[in-house]
Length: 305
Image 1 (tube, rainbow, N blue to C red):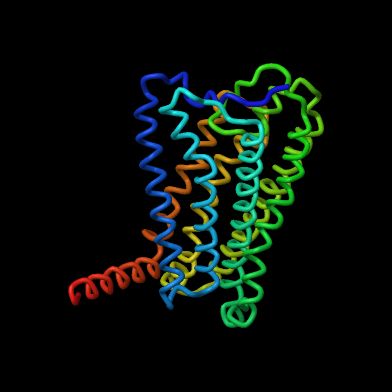
Image 2: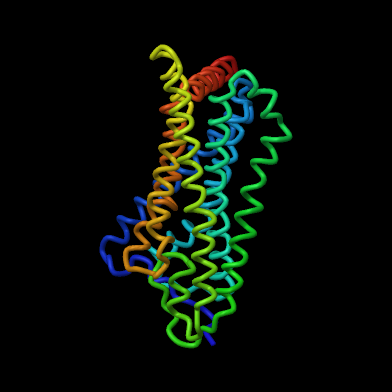
Protein backbone atom coordinates (compact mmCIF):
# COMPACT_ATOMS: atom_id res chain seq x y z
CA UNK A 1 0.00 0.00 0.00
CA UNK A 2 1.15 3.51 -0.82
CA UNK A 3 2.55 5.36 2.22
CA UNK A 4 3.40 8.62 0.47
CA UNK A 5 2.55 10.50 -2.70
CA UNK A 6 4.58 12.60 -5.12
CA UNK A 7 3.14 15.98 -6.15
CA UNK A 8 4.21 16.46 -9.78
CA UNK A 9 2.99 20.11 -9.70
CA UNK A 10 4.60 22.12 -12.54
CA UNK A 11 7.66 19.92 -13.10
CA UNK A 12 6.97 19.86 -16.85
CA UNK A 13 7.63 23.61 -17.05
CA UNK A 14 11.28 23.03 -16.00
CA UNK A 15 13.14 26.37 -16.48
CA UNK A 16 9.95 28.36 -15.80
CA UNK A 17 9.61 26.97 -12.28
CA UNK A 18 11.80 29.67 -10.70
CA UNK A 19 9.81 32.39 -12.46
CA UNK A 20 6.60 30.68 -11.32
CA UNK A 21 7.99 30.52 -7.78
CA UNK A 22 8.61 34.29 -7.74
CA UNK A 23 5.14 35.00 -9.20
CA UNK A 24 3.36 32.74 -6.67
CA UNK A 25 5.40 34.13 -3.76
CA UNK A 26 4.48 37.71 -4.71
CA UNK A 27 0.80 36.78 -5.10
CA UNK A 28 0.93 34.99 -1.73
CA UNK A 29 2.46 38.03 0.04
CA UNK A 30 -0.09 40.36 -1.59
CA UNK A 31 -2.95 38.05 -0.59
CA UNK A 32 -1.88 37.72 3.05
CA UNK A 33 -1.07 41.42 3.45
CA UNK A 34 -4.21 42.67 1.71
CA UNK A 35 -6.59 40.42 3.61
CA UNK A 36 -4.95 41.16 6.97
CA UNK A 37 -5.34 44.89 6.24
CA UNK A 38 -9.07 44.35 5.63
CA UNK A 39 -9.42 42.32 8.85
CA UNK A 40 -7.69 45.03 10.91
CA UNK A 41 -9.63 47.86 9.28
CA UNK A 42 -12.98 46.22 10.01
CA UNK A 43 -11.88 45.33 13.53
CA UNK A 44 -10.67 48.78 14.57
CA UNK A 45 -12.54 51.26 12.35
CA UNK A 46 -15.98 52.08 13.86
CA UNK A 47 -17.49 53.11 10.51
CA UNK A 48 -16.87 49.60 9.14
CA UNK A 49 -18.40 47.68 12.03
CA UNK A 50 -21.56 46.75 10.16
CA UNK A 51 -22.94 43.33 9.07
CA UNK A 52 -21.67 43.75 5.49
CA UNK A 53 -18.10 44.44 6.58
CA UNK A 54 -18.31 41.74 9.23
CA UNK A 55 -18.97 39.26 6.41
CA UNK A 56 -16.15 40.79 4.34
CA UNK A 57 -13.69 40.43 7.23
CA UNK A 58 -14.85 36.84 7.79
CA UNK A 59 -14.26 36.21 4.09
CA UNK A 60 -10.75 37.72 4.46
CA UNK A 61 -9.97 35.35 7.37
CA UNK A 62 -11.13 32.46 5.23
CA UNK A 63 -8.91 33.56 2.33
CA UNK A 64 -5.83 33.72 4.58
CA UNK A 65 -6.48 30.18 5.84
CA UNK A 66 -7.26 28.99 2.32
CA UNK A 67 -3.96 30.05 0.72
CA UNK A 68 -1.92 28.82 3.70
CA UNK A 69 -3.25 25.31 3.14
CA UNK A 70 -1.67 25.04 -0.33
CA UNK A 71 0.87 27.77 -1.10
CA UNK A 72 3.71 26.95 1.37
CA UNK A 73 3.85 23.34 0.10
CA UNK A 74 3.64 24.55 -3.51
CA UNK A 75 6.53 27.00 -3.04
CA UNK A 76 8.62 24.25 -1.46
CA UNK A 77 7.74 21.94 -4.33
CA UNK A 78 8.91 24.46 -6.95
CA UNK A 79 12.43 24.87 -5.54
CA UNK A 80 13.01 21.54 -3.80
CA UNK A 81 13.93 18.15 -5.20
CA UNK A 82 11.76 16.48 -2.56
CA UNK A 83 8.21 16.54 -3.91
CA UNK A 84 6.86 13.87 -1.58
CA UNK A 85 3.99 14.16 0.88
CA UNK A 86 2.89 11.50 3.37
CA UNK A 87 -0.47 9.80 2.90
CA UNK A 88 -1.73 11.34 6.15
CA UNK A 89 -0.48 14.80 5.13
CA UNK A 90 -2.06 14.36 1.72
CA UNK A 91 -5.54 13.52 3.04
CA UNK A 92 -5.27 16.24 5.69
CA UNK A 93 -4.49 18.83 3.01
CA UNK A 94 -7.33 17.53 0.85
CA UNK A 95 -9.82 17.79 3.72
CA UNK A 96 -8.72 21.32 4.70
CA UNK A 97 -8.63 22.57 1.11
CA UNK A 98 -12.07 21.23 0.18
CA UNK A 99 -13.63 22.28 3.51
CA UNK A 100 -12.46 25.87 3.07
CA UNK A 101 -13.51 25.85 -0.61
CA UNK A 102 -17.04 24.77 0.29
CA UNK A 103 -17.15 27.25 3.17
CA UNK A 104 -16.24 30.04 0.75
CA UNK A 105 -19.08 29.01 -1.59
CA UNK A 106 -21.64 29.24 1.21
CA UNK A 107 -20.19 32.48 2.59
CA UNK A 108 -20.57 34.11 -0.84
CA UNK A 109 -24.22 33.01 -0.74
CA UNK A 110 -24.69 34.56 2.71
CA UNK A 111 -23.12 37.81 1.50
CA UNK A 112 -25.54 37.91 -1.45
CA UNK A 113 -28.47 37.41 0.94
CA UNK A 114 -27.18 40.25 3.12
CA UNK A 115 -27.02 42.66 0.15
CA UNK A 116 -30.49 41.62 -1.02
CA UNK A 117 -31.93 42.26 2.43
CA UNK A 118 -30.15 45.63 2.73
CA UNK A 119 -31.47 46.87 -0.62
CA UNK A 120 -34.98 45.40 -0.52
CA UNK A 121 -35.66 46.39 3.12
CA UNK A 122 -33.41 49.38 3.87
CA UNK A 123 -35.61 50.78 6.66
CA UNK A 124 -35.86 47.45 8.50
CA UNK A 125 -32.36 46.18 7.73
CA UNK A 126 -30.78 47.20 11.04
CA UNK A 127 -33.54 45.64 13.12
CA UNK A 128 -33.62 42.46 11.03
CA UNK A 129 -29.86 41.93 10.69
CA UNK A 130 -29.08 41.85 14.40
CA UNK A 131 -25.71 40.73 15.74
CA UNK A 132 -27.07 37.31 16.71
CA UNK A 133 -28.34 36.74 13.17
CA UNK A 134 -25.28 37.86 11.21
CA UNK A 135 -22.99 35.96 13.59
CA UNK A 136 -25.02 32.78 13.01
CA UNK A 137 -25.00 33.42 9.24
CA UNK A 138 -21.20 33.78 9.33
CA UNK A 139 -20.76 30.53 11.30
CA UNK A 140 -23.19 28.41 9.25
CA UNK A 141 -20.97 28.25 6.10
CA UNK A 142 -18.08 26.84 8.17
CA UNK A 143 -20.30 24.12 9.64
CA UNK A 144 -21.81 23.22 6.26
CA UNK A 145 -18.51 23.34 4.39
CA UNK A 146 -16.60 21.11 6.81
CA UNK A 147 -19.52 18.68 7.19
CA UNK A 148 -19.94 18.12 3.43
CA UNK A 149 -16.19 17.92 2.85
CA UNK A 150 -15.80 15.28 5.56
CA UNK A 151 -18.10 12.93 3.61
CA UNK A 152 -16.15 13.21 0.33
CA UNK A 153 -12.83 12.98 2.20
CA UNK A 154 -13.95 9.86 4.10
CA UNK A 155 -14.96 8.01 0.93
CA UNK A 156 -11.72 9.00 -0.82
CA UNK A 157 -9.55 8.02 2.16
CA UNK A 158 -11.16 4.57 2.16
CA UNK A 159 -9.90 3.87 -1.37
CA UNK A 160 -6.94 1.52 -1.81
CA UNK A 161 -3.74 2.92 -3.29
CA UNK A 162 -1.40 0.13 -4.29
CA UNK A 163 0.15 1.29 -7.54
CA UNK A 164 1.35 4.64 -8.96
CA UNK A 165 1.71 7.40 -6.39
CA UNK A 166 2.42 10.42 -8.61
CA UNK A 167 -0.31 13.08 -8.37
CA UNK A 168 -0.45 15.31 -11.44
CA UNK A 169 -1.29 18.36 -9.37
CA UNK A 170 0.32 20.80 -6.92
CA UNK A 171 -1.96 19.71 -4.08
CA UNK A 172 -3.80 16.64 -2.89
CA UNK A 173 -7.25 16.90 -4.37
CA UNK A 174 -10.09 14.45 -4.78
CA UNK A 175 -10.05 13.79 -8.55
CA UNK A 176 -6.29 13.09 -8.92
CA UNK A 177 -6.42 10.70 -5.96
CA UNK A 178 -9.45 8.91 -7.40
CA UNK A 179 -7.50 8.35 -10.62
CA UNK A 180 -4.65 6.68 -8.68
CA UNK A 181 -6.89 4.29 -6.75
CA UNK A 182 -6.71 0.58 -7.47
CA UNK A 183 -10.21 0.09 -6.01
CA UNK A 184 -13.55 1.22 -7.38
CA UNK A 185 -13.87 5.01 -6.78
CA UNK A 186 -17.59 5.08 -7.61
CA UNK A 187 -18.80 6.15 -4.14
CA UNK A 188 -15.99 8.69 -3.82
CA UNK A 189 -16.86 10.22 -7.21
CA UNK A 190 -20.55 10.25 -6.34
CA UNK A 191 -19.82 12.03 -3.03
CA UNK A 192 -17.63 14.55 -4.89
CA UNK A 193 -20.32 15.31 -7.46
CA UNK A 194 -22.97 15.70 -4.74
CA UNK A 195 -20.65 18.06 -2.82
CA UNK A 196 -20.11 20.09 -6.01
CA UNK A 197 -23.84 20.36 -6.60
CA UNK A 198 -24.63 21.27 -2.97
CA UNK A 199 -21.83 23.80 -2.60
CA UNK A 200 -21.44 25.20 -6.11
CA UNK A 201 -24.37 24.69 -8.46
CA UNK A 202 -27.23 25.31 -6.01
CA UNK A 203 -25.59 28.37 -4.36
CA UNK A 204 -24.84 29.84 -7.80
CA UNK A 205 -28.49 29.70 -8.82
CA UNK A 206 -29.58 31.16 -5.47
CA UNK A 207 -27.01 33.98 -5.78
CA UNK A 208 -28.26 34.70 -9.31
CA UNK A 209 -31.83 34.78 -7.98
CA UNK A 210 -30.81 37.25 -5.26
CA UNK A 211 -29.18 39.55 -7.81
CA UNK A 212 -32.13 39.36 -10.19
CA UNK A 213 -34.24 40.54 -7.26
CA UNK A 214 -31.67 43.23 -6.42
CA UNK A 215 -31.65 44.51 -10.02
CA UNK A 216 -35.45 44.59 -9.96
CA UNK A 217 -35.46 46.65 -6.74
CA UNK A 218 -32.76 49.00 -8.04
CA UNK A 219 -34.69 49.53 -11.30
CA UNK A 220 -37.56 50.94 -9.25
CA UNK A 221 -35.34 53.53 -7.55
CA UNK A 222 -35.82 57.02 -8.96
CA UNK A 223 -32.70 58.93 -9.96
CA UNK A 224 -29.36 57.72 -11.32
CA UNK A 225 -27.50 58.65 -8.14
CA UNK A 226 -29.69 56.45 -5.96
CA UNK A 227 -29.33 53.53 -8.37
CA UNK A 228 -25.55 53.87 -8.53
CA UNK A 229 -25.28 54.07 -4.75
CA UNK A 230 -27.42 50.95 -4.31
CA UNK A 231 -25.54 48.90 -6.88
CA UNK A 232 -22.11 50.05 -5.66
CA UNK A 233 -22.66 48.08 -2.45
CA UNK A 234 -23.06 44.89 -4.52
CA UNK A 235 -20.56 45.29 -7.36
CA UNK A 236 -17.56 44.05 -5.36
CA UNK A 237 -19.36 40.91 -4.26
CA UNK A 238 -20.56 40.19 -7.82
CA UNK A 239 -16.99 40.46 -9.13
CA UNK A 240 -15.54 38.18 -6.43
CA UNK A 241 -18.29 35.59 -6.84
CA UNK A 242 -17.90 35.55 -10.63
CA UNK A 243 -14.12 35.05 -10.40
CA UNK A 244 -14.35 32.34 -7.77
CA UNK A 245 -17.22 30.31 -9.21
CA UNK A 246 -16.01 30.69 -12.79
CA UNK A 247 -12.73 28.90 -12.12
CA UNK A 248 -14.06 26.58 -9.39
CA UNK A 249 -16.94 25.12 -11.36
CA UNK A 250 -14.69 24.43 -14.35
CA UNK A 251 -12.65 22.11 -12.12
CA UNK A 252 -15.22 20.41 -9.91
CA UNK A 253 -18.36 20.04 -12.00
CA UNK A 254 -16.55 17.27 -13.93
CA UNK A 255 -13.93 15.97 -11.45
CA UNK A 256 -11.97 13.78 -13.86
CA UNK A 257 -8.47 14.99 -13.00
CA UNK A 258 -7.83 16.70 -16.36
CA UNK A 259 -4.38 18.00 -17.29
CA UNK A 260 -5.37 21.69 -17.10
CA UNK A 261 -7.23 21.41 -13.77
CA UNK A 262 -4.18 22.56 -11.80
CA UNK A 263 -4.04 25.82 -13.77
CA UNK A 264 -7.72 26.55 -13.08
CA UNK A 265 -7.15 25.59 -9.44
CA UNK A 266 -4.24 28.03 -9.23
CA UNK A 267 -6.52 30.81 -10.50
CA UNK A 268 -9.25 30.39 -7.90
CA UNK A 269 -7.00 29.18 -5.07
CA UNK A 270 -4.38 31.95 -5.27
CA UNK A 271 -5.06 34.63 -7.88
CA UNK A 272 -8.65 35.30 -6.82
CA UNK A 273 -7.78 35.63 -3.09
CA UNK A 274 -4.95 38.00 -4.10
CA UNK A 275 -7.32 40.20 -6.10
CA UNK A 276 -10.11 40.27 -3.52
CA UNK A 277 -8.54 42.92 -1.22
CA UNK A 278 -8.14 45.26 -4.20
CA UNK A 279 -11.69 44.60 -5.38
CA UNK A 280 -13.09 45.41 -1.94
CA UNK A 281 -10.91 48.52 -1.44
CA UNK A 282 -10.56 50.08 -4.88
CA UNK A 283 -14.29 49.77 -5.60
CA UNK A 284 -15.56 50.58 -2.11
CA UNK A 285 -15.69 54.19 -0.95
CA UNK A 286 -16.13 53.36 2.75
CA UNK A 287 -13.08 51.10 2.85
CA UNK A 288 -10.95 53.66 0.98
CA UNK A 289 -11.98 56.38 3.44
CA UNK A 290 -11.27 54.11 6.41
CA UNK A 291 -7.87 53.19 4.97
CA UNK A 292 -6.95 56.85 4.39
CA UNK A 293 -8.11 57.71 7.91
CA UNK A 294 -6.04 54.89 9.38
CA UNK A 295 -2.92 55.91 7.43
CA UNK A 296 -3.39 59.54 8.46
CA UNK A 297 -3.76 58.51 12.09
CA UNK A 298 -0.56 56.41 11.95
CA UNK A 299 1.34 59.34 10.41
CA UNK A 300 0.21 61.66 13.21
CA UNK A 301 1.26 59.14 15.85
CA UNK A 302 4.61 58.64 14.12
CA UNK A 303 5.28 62.39 13.77
CA UNK A 304 4.30 63.10 17.39
CA UNK A 305 6.63 60.40 18.67
